[in-house]
Length: 158
Image: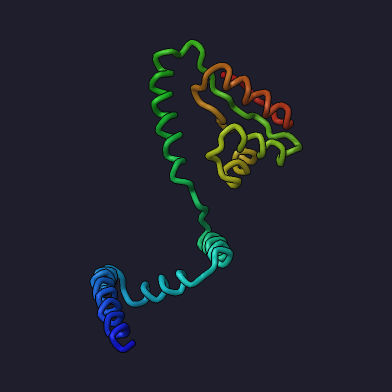
């Protein structure tokens, strides 16, 4: 039995040695304060992590922006370049009045442009005239116009 323990100990020492260089590398990159935070966060449950994220977003006044949000912006830039060549069917949607049902209009704005935050959509309803879509395809502009009118906004196509 003593032989079994002797065999286990060298294996455990090898694992510890293998882990030590990783810890040394991470300690060079982060200060002791950051390491303590990382250790504390690593011990949290998923629910606690969710609460932490929400609290940090509220305290710092930021929101989590998905990484994929940059892709539609790049696609829109490419679409605008292609749209410049085909200007005949492109429309700009301008909201001239948000109407009495601002909540419905905010929902419609966020449905039309999913990259809008709640604050951005609210700001558009408060600062009219607001450009909703620029150089959009005719069918997209018409669809956006119908959604906003259904929500109670006054909209112009240019």
